[in-house]
Length: 373
Ligand SMILES: Cc1ncc(COP(=O)(O)O)c(C=O)c1O
Image (cartoon, rainbow, N blue to C red; front, side, top):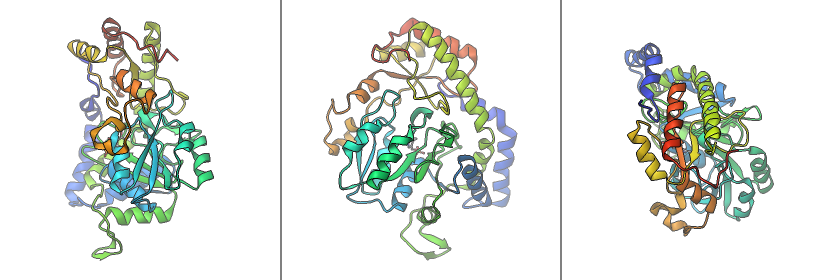
């Protein structure tokens, strides 16, 4: 049997006529840049997330960058974020000249709220919780620390489209939410794409200027903006796919439940989480001891897996300047050696899940650190 890690072709097959019509509409109107499809998707996504505004941009990294810029965060400022995230979270901070200050993760792979306060200095301007793997960070303690220290909260919701915490969708809880629509995300387009969501009109207006050369009116440049717009074809695709997101997320949840059952029965760690409520399982992460061997042997059996992420940010050459060494964030580092992301996408079948877990039990030794929850 063949079990891909993600199967974007299967998803495309299920929505092909809708996507074709949406793309054709852009082509017929030749409305490639800032066409009506962009505003249409922005409105639909704002409504979905539960914010007053959504501004489409060219990628998740661009979303983080313009969000920070819109908040006036720049050179010499510090932003606190988890060591366990994709490097783009930190790159967004670096892109505006600010310093990413990393903190340890909790048992559920998310920013450890108790470590945040210790990392605050006179230069701290914001906290960036990352809703990793599809689970929203428990936001109560983060919002409380932010309020007490007068800090902004920027949610990196790139892996959690549709996830929620206490009834609020990822991205709608802090000052600004940032999304990536990279093709493999729960809501992904057919190229690069991203968005910023907020309830604050001033921030939304600023982000609109920043994404489009600083202009509100053509050739009238109010500030030195960038060119990082969401293009109309991607917006049209996203508008179609947004209508399916809840049902796709529900399928992911079903798949996760079956993985939980089968893995727990086989003595493998199921992902630790704060709550199943609102989790959208962008990734399903277990832990094994002999990982590189496991990946190769699973691959021989037709099962593709991923690692999110094998080298923590503070141990990447790109961030040598942070002066952090091995041992700085032991939980993050141990996880980086053991985590293994199993195939996860809405169209994954029960047979494929059973086959994957069967193959895993043949080739892997479960990690000790993370006992089944
Ligand atoms: C947590 C996180 N933040 C930021 C990004 C960056 O998004 P993009 O690849 O669209 O720039 C990604 C995805 O790649 C991500 O997973």
